[in-house]
Image (tube, rainbow, N blue to C red):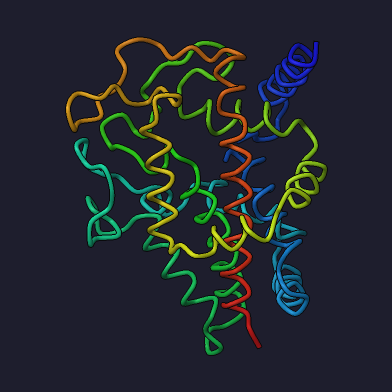
Length: 273
C-alpha cells in the first residue's frame, strides 16, 4: 500500500512537470535540496554572507533556488559533468581525463573566485550559484560517466522518464523525496550522524567523483554491461519500475545528503572571515 501511494505521488508530480510551464529538472528539485541542506548546516556567519550575496541577485530570492542557475539557460556546458574512458575503473592524475574543462575544474575555479576578497560581489555571486550547482552535478552518478551515450541520455528507459539520465535526474529524486522540497531538506538533515559526516568530509572532489563513478558502474544502476574491463551500454531498454526505484532510493538520498554536507564545508572555507 505504501509503495502504491508513493508511486501515485511520483506520477502526479511528473504530470505536473509535463503540463505546467515551470521547469522540473538533480533536475531542479535535486539541486534545490542539496543547496537547502548546505544552507541549513553552514556556520552562522557563512549563512549571513550567502544571504547578503543573494540579495544582490535579480532572479533568485534564496540560495536553494539559485543553485539551478547554470541550467536556466544552460551555461558552461562542459562544466556539468566529467567523462572517463570505457575501460577506466577510477581517476588517474587528471581531474578532467578527456577534456580541458569538467565539473571538477569548475568546482576548483569557482571556489577560487568565491574565496577571493578582491573580486567584485556580482562575480562572487555568480560563483556562489555555480559552485552549488557543480557540487550537485558531481554527485549525480551519470554526470561521471561516458561521452558516447551522453551520460545515459541515449539509453532508453520505460515509464515517465524516457532515458536513464532522466530517471536519475527526476524520477528517482521524486520517488525518494516526495514533492515537498522543504520537508525533504529537513528529513535529510535530521538523518546526519557525526560519523557519516566525518567520513564524507574526508574526501576531495576527485574522491566524490570516484564515488559517483562507482555507482554509475554498479549493476543496480543498469548503466554498464561489463565486458572485461570495459563498461558497455545496455542493449535493451532499462525498465524504470518501482523495483528499480526502490533499489536505488537510499543511494539517491545519500548522494544528495553527501552533496549538501560537502558543499557546506566548501562554503564555510570560501566565506570564512
